[in-house]
Image 1 (cartoon, rainbow, N blue to C red):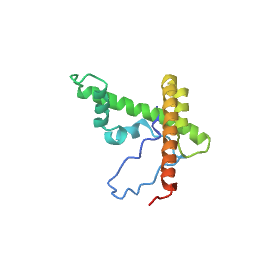
Image 2: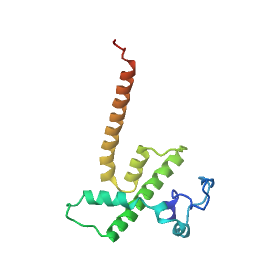
Image 3: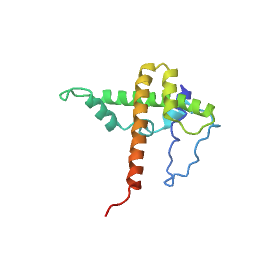
Image 4: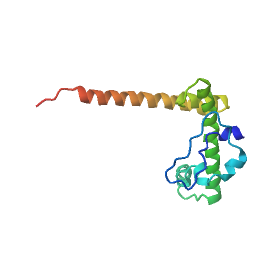
Length: 148
């Protein structure tokens, strides 16, 4: 399980300048004991965001208990760490410092989330298509001659 938490940010101190050294790839993985020392807000997605997503998927009259929100908050945060850790291994293995969308898709497939990966491949393709058409539109706006 400690391999899943290599990407958890370093514990904060009372250093307002944020001058803590950044972890390097050579450092050992974070242990479960280290994880216990992190503040909840440093490890989990904001509960308001999790709650908003949960509420969007149930009828408006449905109430969601605090314990249910906290459980999902912890689960999705762990899931993101799990997938990101696998993607980071791939990018480091290829001597890259940036994790890309393809790394995430590969990690999801490698970890058995093939159904999700297929849907996300389509999404990633559409996103890239939209970004390239938006960039082309911006370029066209700057090239057109001005008519007075």
